Length: 133
Image (cartoon, rainbow, N blue to C red; front, side, top):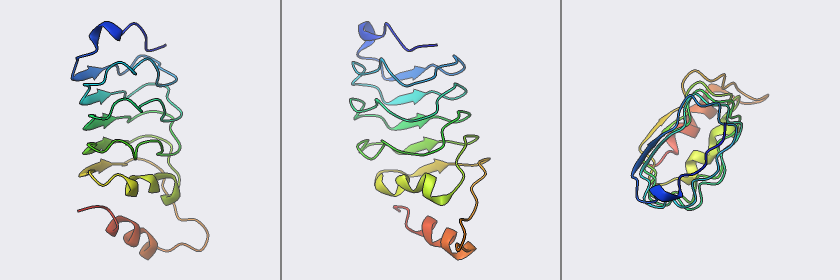
């Protein structure tokens, strides 16, 4: 249930560790060449400990228990973020994506993103129109 013993693989570019009941992101600090990380179908509740993965271009965190997109703005090369089937409930819970200027593709499908009191469909349209193009 833990990510461990990967330091010998510090030059890998792509890592698939889906479906392993991983509860938190850890043990990836030495994988500084990583470009693609598949963490879908685990037990993650938050996004953390990706600070050293500055070359990351693709991140799949789909099918986890994550309630908020966060701690990704330092990933200056992140182009694709797959976060469908998580537990996002509002525009605010995914608004962090606006801080990732390199992002080209985002999937937040199959989340129960709803309007807060006072928000309208126009607010949703305004949010998505702010995405980097």
